[in-house]
Image (cartoon, rainbow, N blue to C red; front, top):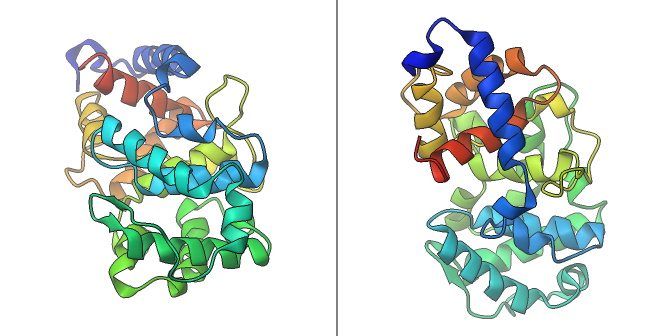
Length: 253
C-alpha cells in the first residue's frame, strides 16, 4: 500500500472520491474509445458503436481510435440500419490487432439477431447483483453467431477472464450521463453491481493503494476489488474507474 494511506481507509476513500470526480469529465475522454459513441444520439446507434469500440479497446489509444474511425466509416450515419440490413459475408476489409474481417462479420450477424429479437440491452439479463450473470447470459446468445476463432473476443468470466472490455461497456451503458461521460441508457442492471474494468494498469494502481492483494488480473481479483470499492461507495463503486485510470494514465502514480 502507498505509505500515505497505510491504516487510513477514510483518507484513501477521500482521495479516490476526489480523483474520481476530477477525471469523470468530458475533457478526459477526447482520446478515449467512448468518444466515438458520443457522436450519435439514437439509443441503438450508441449501443452498437459503444459495444464495437469496447470490443477493440486494447492496444494504444491512438490505434484504437484509428480503427474505430474505420468502423464508423463502415457503419455509416445509422449503425442500426446498417446492422439490420447486413448480409453475411459482405463485411469490408478490417483488422485491429487480432480482430479481423471474419470476426467483424460474426459480430455484425450476432448484433443483427439481437436487434431483431429485442435488442442488445435485452441480451444482458440477470436476476442477482452478480455482473458475471448478465455477461454470461449475453455471451450464450451472441457466441453462436461467431466462428470458433472469434470466441476469444467475447470474454468468459466463468473461465476466469476479468472481462475488462465488456465490464467497461456496461459502465458506459448504465452509469448516469450527468457528467457527460457515460450514457445511462440502461436501468435494468443495478448500479452497485457494476465493476471497475480490470487490466494490468488498473490492477497495478489498485495494488499500490492496497485495494487488492491477488497478483492475477482475473475475475476473482475483480470481485476482490469490487468488495473493497463497495465499502467506499455502496451505490456506485464503478465511479472509481475514473480515479484508478486517471492516476495511472495521467499522473503515472
